Image 1 (cartoon, helix red, strand yellow):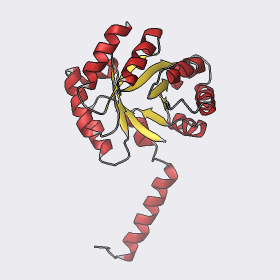
Image 2 (cartoon, rainbow, N blue to C red):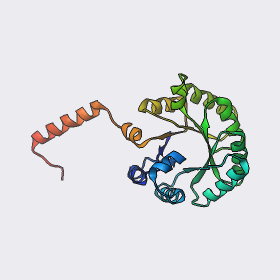
Image 3 (cartoon, rainbow, N blue to C red):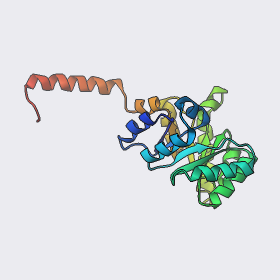
Image 4 (cartoon, rainbow, N blue to C red):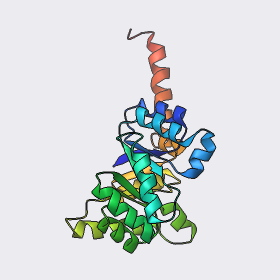
Length: 218
């Protein structure tokens, strides 16, 4: 599974990228608002920090303007993935932009038939929002499994499943088990994936025992 981080905070992105475990970044208008900086400036900086896909979202609702905005966003850097909503107009824009060679992330997916349509439209990524589905009392992981099965049935669909709206480390684990290609994760959740109390306890024990030997490695 690949890991994207879901933020527009360039300091966080730089720190996470230095670990060599970050494959891309997703942003949205809400995250850009939190950054408090010009949209295109933030996207350009992120694209320099991360060689992988960086999702930048259109704001238009009609296909023609989405396409125009998408082309403009794609000019910022080669690794921009134009983010469009999973609507009829969004799928039209996806088809056009994909045919022009641009990466497209079709977002706000909430059922398997929507994901099938995104695959048909040539999306690079489809983003099912598993946390929001859970909020409604349904099972977001079931959706990931359904999309995986559908995509695996058809060789012509090359769309990657990008698990989004992830809230917990368990969401990441279950997404991986269900076959998601990518998880886009808030920075705090991404950092928490390496944590376990028994790991911390083991380190404490090793450090204490090593100190008793009076030795040094360097």
